[in-house]
Structure formats: C-alpha cells, structure tokens
Image 1 (cartoon, helix red, strand yellow):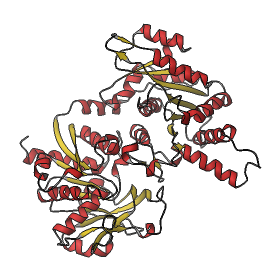
Image 2 (image 1 turned 120 degrees about the vertical axis):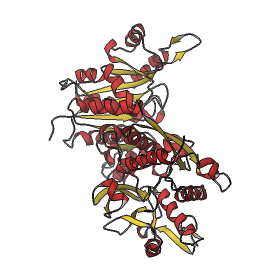
Image 3 (image 1 turned 90 degrees about the horizontal axis):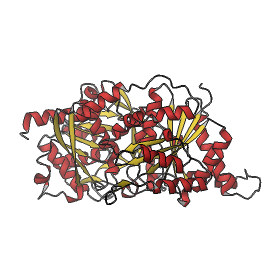
Length: 542
C-alpha cells in the first residue's frame, strides 16, 4: 500500500479540443518515468450515463475498459501512453453523479433533507475523485475535467475542485489550466487576452490555477510568458508552452523540455526521483519518424468522416507500423460508397484491407464487397467485430452458396442467420451498458495463424457487441474451409475466424485495438502490418 495520494486537476479554457487528454497522459508518462504510480480519471459533464448510446459522429469512438465500462476515448490515450489498464472508476459523467444522488435520495439516505447541487452533487463528485486515491495503489491521481471553464455543465465540477483544494491541504493538490494563445497573422503577434479571460473566469469560481499550459502554434517568447504570469498571478516558470506537434507522441518530450514534471513535483512537494529517460519512447518516436518503407491500408467503415470514430484502430496501426519501421498510410473508405461498379477502382491500389466495427444496416453491403475483394485477391485482411461478422456473411454467400445469408441484426427473416443475437441479449430492452462488454477469455487453437501471432493458448480480449456467430452453422463453415481458431471456453462463442488458403485473413469478434499501446503493440496488428508489408513487397510495384 502506498502513502498519501496527491491530486492534479486539469481544466481547459477558451475553446474545446485543446488536448487536455494528451497533456494529462503526457504528464502522467513523465511522472511514471520518475518512478511514481499514476492513474488518470476523466470527468465528463454530459448527462448521459456513459457514451455507449452516443452516435460516433457526436462523440467519436467508445473506449471499453477491462471491467466493461463504456468510456470516453481519452481513456484510450491514457492506456496507450501509460501501458496501464483503466477501469469503471476512471470515467465519471454527470449522468452517473445524478443517478447515484437520486438513488440515495429515493432510499432515504439524506434523512429527509433538501437535495441540492451543493453539497450533495459536489460531495458525490469529490467522492468519485478521491475513490481512486484511496485504493492505495497510486502516488498521483490526475483528474481531467471535460468541457471548458464557463460552461454551465462544468460548474459543479469546478466547485468540487475548489472545495477539494481546501480540504486536501497545502501541497496535496494543484490545478493545471490548459488554454489557448492564438497567433494573429494580420497583427503578426501572439495574443494573451483569451488566456487572461479564461483564468479570470476560473478565478470567479474561486479557483486559482497553479500552472498554465499554453497551446500555441508559435514559440512563446519570454516577454509573453512574463505578461501571462503577471496577469494570471503565477511565476513565469509556471507558464508552460505546448506548441503544436507533428504527432501526439511528441508531447511528453516537449513537455519534459518545458520541465512541466519538475514544476508539478515542486508544487506537490514530492521528490524529483530519477530523471525520466524515456528510452523506449524515444526509440518508438525515432522509428515512427524515420520509416524505411510505406504501405497503404484501407479502413472500410461507416463513420470514416470523423477520424475519432476509429481512433484506437488508427493508433494501433501507427504503433505496429513504427515497430516494423514502416509508415502506415490509412485510407478512410466509406462503406456506403462501395458497389460492384467501383470496388476495383477504389480498392485495387491498397496493400491491406481492414473492415471496421459498427452498428446498424447502413453501409453493410459495401463492407461485404470489401471482404470479398480481399478474399478473392488474397489481400491481407483484418475484420474487427462487425468486420468479422461481415467476413462470415460474405463467406456463407459466396463460398458456401447461402445467397441469402445475413445477420438477424439486418434481416430478421433470413433463412441463413449465420450471425444472430446472443441468447443472453434476447431479453434485453435497455440500450446503455447492456451489451457484452469488457474482457473475456479466448482459447487459441494450435497450428493456426492466431496462435502464431499470440504465441499462447489463452488470451483475454475486450468486447462490445450483441450479435455473434451462430454455432448451428459451424459444421457447414468448417466443411467449406473456414477455421475457428479462437473460442470462448465458457460460452463456446466464436472469437476468431481465419482462412488458411489466404496469406493473412483473420476476423475477430473482439476489439484488439483497445489493448494496443506504445510499449506493447497488439500482436494482431503487428501480424497484420507485417503481412501487408510482405504482400506489397511481393506483389505490388508501387
């Protein structure tokens, strides 16, 4: 058990999408490299219980933790940077806060008192924040507060931070405020007023930031830092530059150069520990920035207009590519646009094809066409969740002759329901948090591609689905040449399918992208990228 835990609160001002999650993850990486045990928590101001029911266009991807929480995509950044799993406790929403408070009120736990934002809502927020610090596993808990200071939804969170700063005592918590210092080309200078106003708004809520991290496209001159420090009640050393980076993986090193970790440790009265060398991180970055070859992988999905909808897949491909010294050029292909007329033109120049997850009927036939093209032309293929199900349907239709094969998700009257709703899901009526979620075991069959990639017989992978392979068709598929190389030992659920006649053709019911990190790229992505490189070098001129 560790001693008393310190708390860091990260707020944002001026505009959204400044990168609080990346700054939080980068700071955590620097503290981790100094020998501290760190975790990061995201507080989201929306009233949804979790992002599980949100449209990907609205919110980006839903990230799933080991214990089955549907969370904000920032938790993916936390895990990719720290190589440490998060949990239900790492993502808190206003919906969860109010749900808990209302349940307590209904159970009479407030003794008949009037339930109010202060103290009841703020008390619950504080309880959730301190929950991670009280388990005895962490030296530092970083809490990222979603939204922007001044938003009505964020006010209870800022008030909770104000109260906690007082309750925790001196040197036990700090507030880092991320803000924007825009460059006006017409004036030829950086403008500090947005930052001043943002800090003023925070001060009006009773919170003085201890450190300012300034997002900017240009270098922050000393006089600009001094001006910001003067008007925001800070030392110049507490004004940190966060310049636009070529890749998110540059940010820890850029913030280290700015000595953000040193300033944080000084303010928390913690020993500096060992100098963070970040050798493995630097090696990864060196490979990422100096590839010896390039490949083109088509990501066939339904939400490709918004890159964040498949954020973890993008990062997993980049990580595997860097490991192989290869730049992965990801071509986003909207499955709705694919048809028999254009399929060759769109896919012929690709070196690999990945069919992405998703829900609903829209764009399904395009995904099936992409699978068929990969199978027939023996292009390396990886299907994830719905992508695996589309590979199953394509095989049933075009190899087994079951022309009307489908999933009951799209056609409840199909004579060949090769994909069907899980038995445990048939009585479920509520949408939120009711799918098969979190990590489940998968037993790998020896002498298969899956075993070659994993090099072990039992793995645990994260799921998010309601439909599965219909085992009543299993014999038919095996007779036609499909191999079921991964099976859940408890439920007999098909987890992995592959076609041995193809150099690399594999579909998985789970989401391997959730477990890929900088230090440990996922073996399926590693194998897929390697196969794509080999395919390009063997068959492709360009």
